Amino acid sequence: MSITGILTATAVVGLVGLFIGLFLGIAAIKFEVKTDEKEEAVLGVLPGNNCGGCGYAGCSGLAAAIAKGEAPVNACPVGGEKVGQKIAEIMGVEAESGGRKVAFVKCIGTCEKANVDYEYHGSQDCRMVSFVPAGGPKSCSYGCAGYGSCVRACPFDAIHVVDGVAVVDKEACKACGKCVEACPKHLIELIPYEAKHQVACSSKDKGPVTIKACQTGCIACQLCKKNCPSDAIVIEDFHARIDYEKCTGCGICKEKCPKKVIL
Image 1 (cartoon, rainbow, N blue to C red):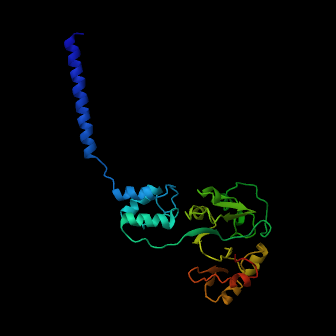
Image 2 (image 1 turned 45 degrees about the horizontal axis):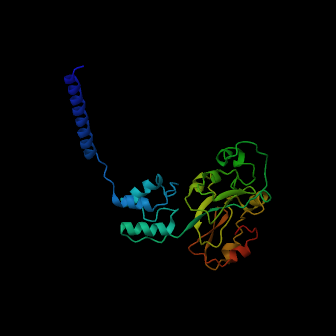
Image 3 (image 1 turned 120 degrees about the horizontal axis):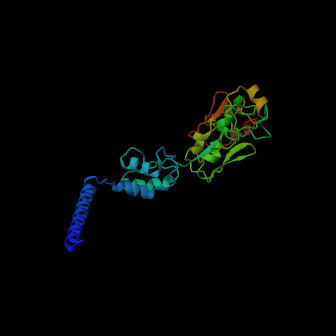
């Protein structure tokens, strides 16, 4: 190849490279995705667990929603009040005081206290067990199956099955709500961290049926309700529920409960 041919080829390659470079540069400017500075700042404050407990697809999804005003500044259950305050400063708004929450399992029907109707040897998953007769071998169809779907769902190792019943580590729980979603019997709810007493039963059976199924089931005797000085207890579907906004933590309900189902 002559020197002229080499120089021509070099020039052509150079011009093609220059054209591609200019094209990519213009395209980058044209299709640039502008980032919201507040969104980036909020994302930097969020803990980065991407647990989805806020209802959005990870921390980036929540950061975008907060920046657009579509989510409250204290929407992150993991970060809690401290993170909420930091985000409020970024957004230039006041952070509402939501109070810390914690997951609570409304059942204490352990292996010793809960009766069983048959032996089960199938899949060790509560969601699968919910399809077998009575939702599991325990006589109480409302009680904790104890096969750990909530344990596997928790990203913080805050819940474990102890003696056949799921138990929450109050200090490790971040109230992300994953266990609440995972429980097929809807036994887990988020309650105030400062709550002094909880009704550890979800049975909707009448008293005589509950007594046959579990030693510690609520029989809706109403002694807790009648003796509560704050009118903080209601009886719904044959079991007691505490109104945490009214409850003063006096402990009278716990003392009066004959089945010791109020913790």
